[in-house]
Length: 206
Image 1 (cartoon, rainbow, N blue to C red):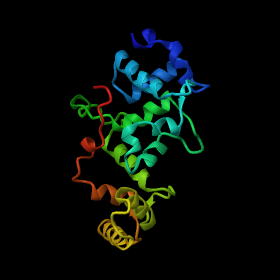
Image 2 (cartoon, rainbow, N blue to C red):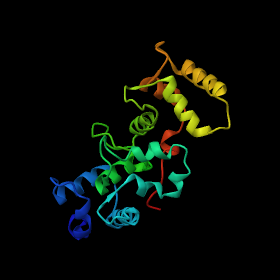
Image 3 (cartoon, helix red, strand yellow):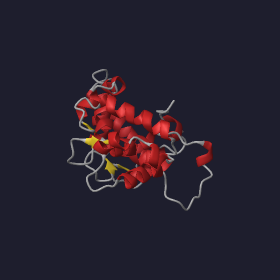
């Protein structure tokens, strides 16, 4: 059984102080339908990034991941792993953020609709993506916030005037209430025909 056979000693470093080992496991199992061997492999990846060997990861540890280092939004994605005011993330927090990117399997689509919404649902994936833009956390994407992301994505390959035009057009097309910003509901509407489940999925366990 998973809760018995997993190497507890190696995981204790990643626990929150007030959290028992059983609460820790239950929280992970609530996010992931995974086997003992799969959690072991994910923990192995976590420890390989943990250069300080203290059971937590820093932003610098994440920046050593080549895919994030070259991603224009790498810093935004890395920041999503860290609660506000924190500069370290343990294995539990690491798993919780990764859970947003877990593909939705066919057998999950028919699960009880009255149960808790999984972190890898379409809605939660969209919330995660929205937060990458919404820097001031006011639940709206302003023109300035959109411009910052566009600059990250295109670098110096396009003029500020062209970027401004793109931002203005993007907001104009999405803005339904006339506040010159994009709310989460408007963000969802714009992406309603996009296969978010596929585009925001990474098969970490294969």
